[in-house]
Figure 1: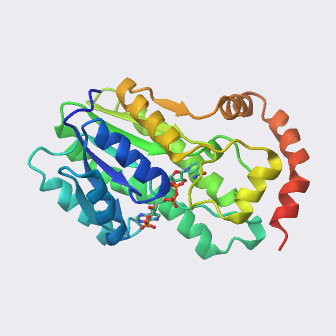
Figure 2: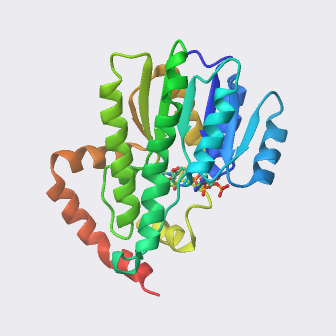
Figure 3: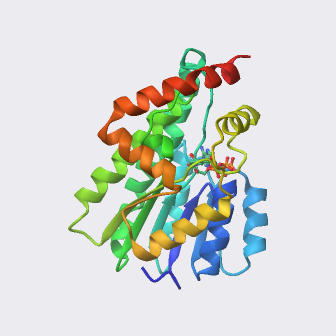
Length: 262
Ligand SMILES: NC(=O)c1ccc[n+]([C@@H]2O[C@H](COP(=O)([O-])OP(=O)(O)OC[C@H]3O[C@@H](n4cnc5c(N)ncnc54)[C@H](OP(=O)(O)O)[C@@H]3O)[C@@H](O)[C@H]2O)c1
């Protein structure tokens, strides 16, 4: 897709990856509908970007919040071309400690809200000559990871949603892409996750790396993109020979347990 002059809805816009995406997309000539819960942070971002960007303050976990986004997009004279489902939350902790409320919040924010918002905006995306939906997943959407059981489940679900919807819309003007970042330096990762990444020697990207990958993926319309060669290889191996990854992750488990321990 030629991005110049297109309109994109970006959720989680004021977050670490979201704000880097906003800058990269605005630089490519995209007009943005910036969505998040923090009005001040969205206004500050829109001010930094300059240009004709809109902000919508909305909790995407609520019907009311998603309807507000839908109403704003429906009122745009030129409609929307792109939806980027980037908003998300994470939770590191042993499964026994993940309460029903936390698991509900993880699944609602990371899986159900993007599905429902996509459903609410699909008619508008169909009106564009070409519409694109990008779901921002995670390397943990292909590799179930100890300490991230609820998060992994939500991101596996998001990857499944992306794949099924892409195939269902294959005869339409709307494409569905899935982008899987690896560990990235943002506030979603607390001190324990940063300690875990350091202990395991995991590479950590800057948000700008993810934003560049998004812009390249939108331009090429590549259906699936993952960041990091080792992570892509492990995801491939996990699909082919999951027992190999079971054994590799069992060797990491003592380190994970040490950091999980209070
Ligand atoms: N950072 C990583 O290591 C990493 C790795 C792989 C994948 N990812 C994925 O990348 C995406 C962006 O994460 P990030 O690293 O940029 O995290 P972040 O800095 O914490 O940003 C997450 C954003 O999501 C928004 N959000 C959360 N719940 C929401 C809700 N109910 N309604 C509306 N907005 C909501 C937050 O908005 P508020 O401003 O309102 O709080 C925040 O702006 C997520 O989907 C995450 O799973 C991140």
